[in-house]
Length: 135
Image (cartoon, rainbow, N blue to C red; front, side, top):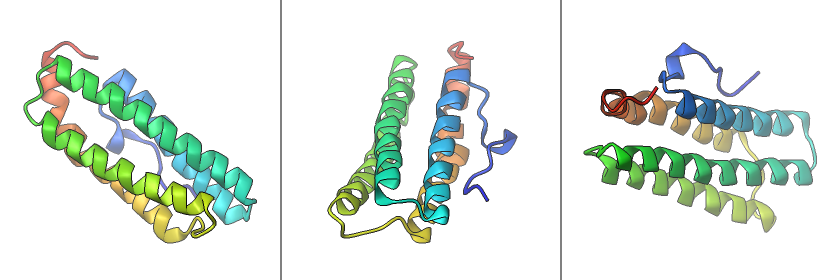
């Protein structure tokens, strides 16, 4: 079963952001499936690395859009992004060093953080971007 189900409840209606969020959902679900299937650490490491890299890419895209449209809470939004990326970087390093495995607790953290961030923090900037003509 997927950790996150993609649907209207987590779509924002901004094409570039929604497509990137969907990719993040897919990567989290792929990581969870690899864990459930007991796939080797190489598969999980590859997926985890892709998730970390894509998260950085997405956050840069989102923060650039918010900056271009003078989003008033950009500083706080960036802070949330940094806290999350710091956490997943630490986890990735621990995984690659053999100190930690992919666990249900990690999956709960990843999926919970992403869904909450999209439905609360990202929804907060919708008006700013839509007023700026972003579709």
